[in-house]
Image 1 (cartoon, rainbow, N blue to C red):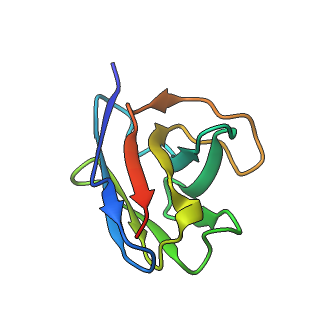
Image 2 (cartoon, rainbow, N blue to C red):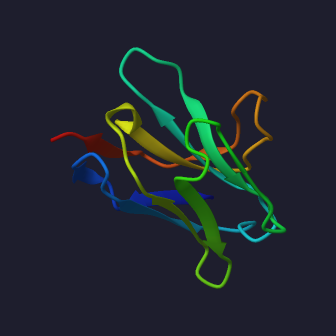
Length: 120
């Protein structure tokens, strides 16, 4: 049984930074691609960043050069460092295990989500 628990969301001013963490329990973490999705009110869930089991990363164009995804397989944890945050980044952020490449239908295991609000 896989469980994903996110933390690190909150309220931040435009231009600020946040770091999200996602701790995974169960088997398969080190062999699985991990990702962060987000969903804003009235919008579809979108893939923000993905990291393969080998450490290769991909980002949505909207967050390139601002967000960084990383993983620590010794801690079964994936991170999302978010810098230069904008109001458009406001959303619920979801951790995902078994993340397909960008453009494919979301699947795999999900965390409960953590709210990120960017506002002055």
